[in-house]
Length: 155
Image (cartoon, rainbow, N blue to C red; front, side, top):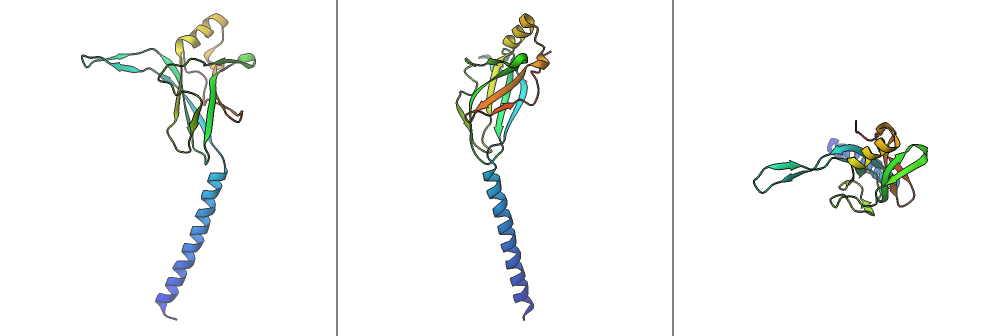
């Protein structure tokens, strides 16, 4: 048998094995369902003024929600979990926050959910709830609750 024919057969077999392996791997990724991450951060929007300068806006605590899984997921609610299985539900977010319900597509743009920091400071002052006990969360259409990666980052 000619060496070139043998090398061609080996290359073809390697290609088939790799195609089967990576094909099964991508099917598994699609079957795994959504993988939701909730990153909690501080946010201060800035606004440009007519004279070219910028002004800082109010202080917010934000949740950036992304889907790195293989299927879409829909966010139906969000808020801050408090001690004693209580919740602070965000019903009237700022107009620039992502509106709910919101579908997260795999690898798509993340949702930006925000709450005014003053509301959280009010809870801390009036009810004595420490910021470390306030944990942002989101609720998905299937009832799943996903906690933020940290507590409210205020001091």
